Image 1: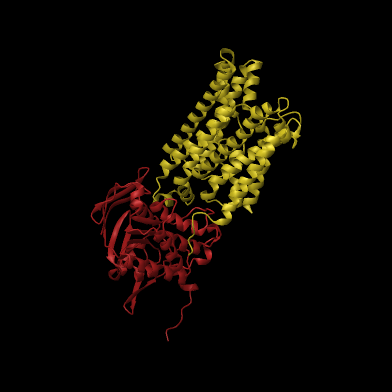
Image 2: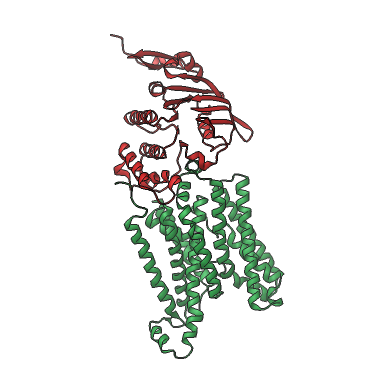
Length: 265
Length: 338
């Protein structure tokens, strides 16, 4: 159980998040949606103490808001949106994820965990490559693996599929979902892909105007919520028990002249 | 399986190779003197004729060890600064720490008149003490200002450059009003020269170097994590601000100590890490031990050349490292861009 009470974040007297209250269960995948600048990344960064915030956070009944960065890192793993360039090798980066537990001499157990993830993520052929020479998608996979190797209780991922092709997107989301169930993780993922969010998420957190607009199970998200969240016109269709979203044009009047439609058979 | 032991074999081989080169440079350095590099010196040492063994043990041995340990200290200092400031331009020289030392020394010589009030030995110590004090003070200013105002590493470097210019100007100001002897003494002090101090000081520098390099075992992975960005490092359990502060203090201690006793030796701290990065990549697992070796090797080499290139004149090694360093640095920048 993961509980956030009255969390607010501000930087230089500018409020970025206000009065966030949230309860998430273990083994559930929570997707955070919202417009650009709504505070999605800020929420993740506040939880993991990259940003200072007020309020309280509880994990399984323990107040974790005042823990040191080091102790907190044993419970929460985070993957950011941007990673600065380095010329470390892939294996170096994977090994870094275990060093907060074992220091410079990794144990057999650490190597077993690393090896397991190398296989799961298909990283065998990259291991000794310089990470800077890899594509955006490959980097994302590697950093996700590095995050999971930390064996956290809470997993925070900021746009983990933004650089991936459709097949890799689905693969990664499936891994995230599976790991969440298997290891009983409390997972928060920031996504912009509404379709995938509704498909894979157990719950949807909608952030608007620095606070939570809705916190719903993904199957109970309706058109009105999406329309308010993004300020667009969206229709939801159902097929095989799954919701599918269709976005209407914003500028109907221009588009009609240049847009061709197939006649319904 | 896929994950390996701590060190890979071919990189251990690189470390061994570096060590061999250092041993070789040590021997050449011990054999070079007024006659250039002279291999007959080996037999002369055994025959115990004239004053040769005196020259050998009192002049060449301290100088050779000084070259290695000062170079190694500067190399490690540069590596640590580049790691925590995340900038390949960071070094004691570019951060203004060396220029601050020079100001400290000039202050001791010109304002406090240490050479006219006390013996040469204690005056030398007073000068070094002030040089050391001012440079450590400057480091504290740089770090605490950076910490308080959340300055980016780039602005810290620019601030360092500005501080360097400021201290150079203060030094020149003092020199302008000083008499000829004092002005010459301060000028001479700023030439980095390895004959300035004896084995005792070299021993102190070696011990400090050893102690600081011990942190390697606790820190190297943290410096690697820092390269992935502060955010990432924090989630790997690293208190980044504390780490930066501690590492900067240690790095400045290393360079301030060397500069205080041997004067300004530019570019070694900047270049040693770059040479290593080109060979083994940027993981601090290898970067730290190898830049200690490459810094030491670089200064040994520079010292041998500066002693033998214009015989019988011995050029202060600081002049030579800067002459050599600028084009070398340009070369590394060019190579890296590729």
